[in-house]
Length: 140
Image (cartoon, rainbow, N blue to C red; front, side):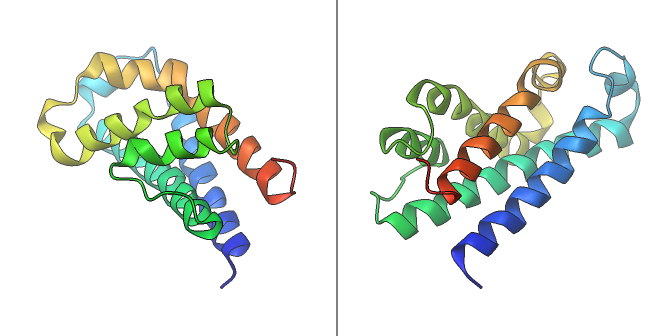
């Protein structure tokens, strides 16, 4: 499978996760009270972030950029090389830290941070996808 096809497949999967996350009312108390809802939100965030990381790693490998040592570096490297705007890359790199909490410290996920990501950070995935689409179209 070509790199472009892998990237497009992962973008589609990421979009599916974000569509689900957008369907959740970030202001509701359901996350505190509903274990299944909270689990689904956490898992969809994890998968959306991992999709973005995978996309970044494909581009880094394809372009021969320096190898990231940690997940947040994936986005910083893309920013350094103009695939993402540097300011956005810095901001989006926080998602990698959130992913690490979801995966490794899942019993400590702060409900306020989960609400914040739902209410304020979902658009970051759309922006990321727009920059990747520009890259694929040779506009970076």
